[in-house]
Length: 222
Image (cartoon, rainbow, N blue to C red):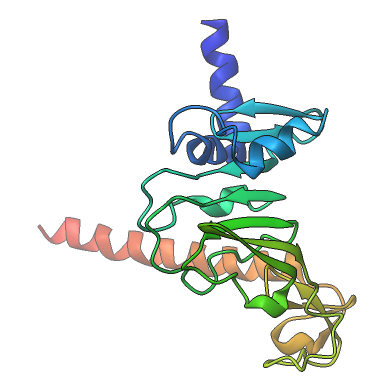
């Protein structure tokens, strides 16, 4: 019983870890010896294996540092891939993948090595990576570039009072600078949390009373 309770608390308390575990178990067995993930995880002393993943041991056990999905018969990217957004190394080789939808690697800001089938281009294009190498039947994208630090003009420039931040290979996001917030970072000052919650609570209470009153009247007429 105690073990069951502990497992339940872990599942409820660490939803990210539970979801990432599903991605780690998408293919059977540990990382393949020929995978760049196996080489990466073996070179570090702060990781522990779980299925096709190696996790960060210690303060952030929910962080998947390496994910090996090679030779998994994937025709599309698996659901829940974003739960491994902290990955540094990812292997998708030896899969019949036909394309990578836009935004597939949104949030993968730490990704430094991505191995793909040869027919697929690196996400964000070759300019999003420092080095793109062809290795027999695979393509290796290495060294994710920070699109906010180059001379390349952004398609959607960040508005005033905001700064550019990377959001994955070739992708950016605009973050409001304190104390600005809201639409296009035009509002200044702290977000009125208490006022917002108070108004929302009052509206909800009024609607509940209105519905209760109308249903009570209908019940009396029956």
